[in-house]
Length: 177
Image (cartoon, rainbow, N blue to C red; front, side):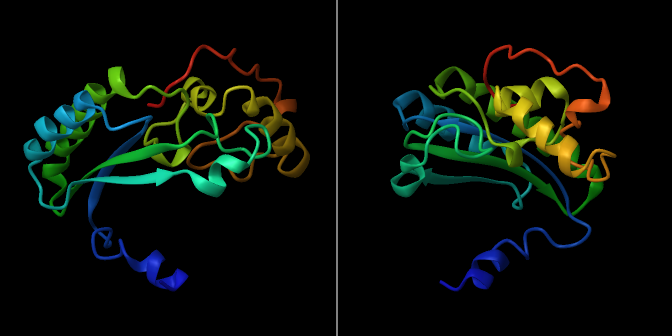
């Protein structure tokens, strides 16, 4: 598949004007409990635009050392699951947001993995970024201080430059939003 075709796969579902909310989580294995949570929650979505997307990370992904990139979490084979609530009508997003949050919460006792993926966050704060990046957040803050000391690039998952006088939160465990 050409790369551009891959990028275009979600264009229709993410058209201008669509309200959406998503959360992501890692799943070590599709255990009976994970399958039961999926089977219980997927039918509860209200909008046909809402979905659960799953992909496998293994192979070359696992050959890279944990500390070689900014990607959070261990470099072990696992599944990444994105729960996406979408609504063409802005009034429908509240129900989809609740569906996403409930589905995500139901999976958390069964994920079996620490960390998360920053693209699976919708709400950002220092504690959530710390849960995704762990100790890598300190390194990223130092890089940000070197290349963007004025924090020009601060939208989405903002990593505050280390020299801004703002203390980074201590690593307090793992998980995603």
